[in-house]
Image 1 (cartoon, rainbow, N blue to C red):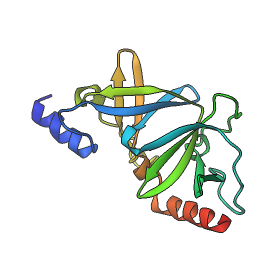
Image 2: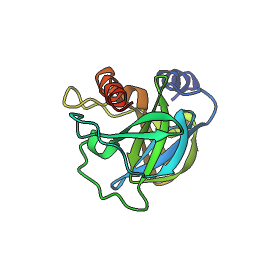
Image 3: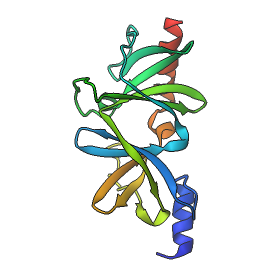
Image 4: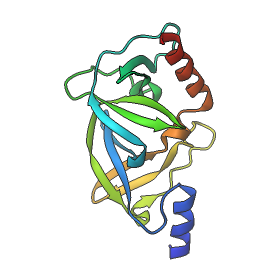
Length: 171
């Protein structure tokens, strides 16, 4: 792959072309995922959420974070990976998504990794069988494979409308 190809692919994935990009890595089941560290506001232990009536299963509810009502999405349920038992390792990552603050529940946080564009492969194509537009690529580091997600593409406009209505219903 030429330097030009790498630069073009990096730009398409929303990455900085020649600089390492940092990702917060987290686990869901046996898989490891990464999200752009610049989207992360804070990481906190899982806390009780206030349920929102008529919300889809993947919207766990809302929390009050220093006076701000923050909707919380369980990524396990969003990705249809089945229910998880919440334990002392369960973590809530607070993110900024499309100008809004929201939380995602994950099984655990691993670390922060720097990946160069050469370490990031394009996301696999599955045709129309499933929506993978939110997968920006597959990061490889030694024997580790990391599914890199664009949280803004993952949360569709319909999802964000549900999240917004849930948060407003509790205020």
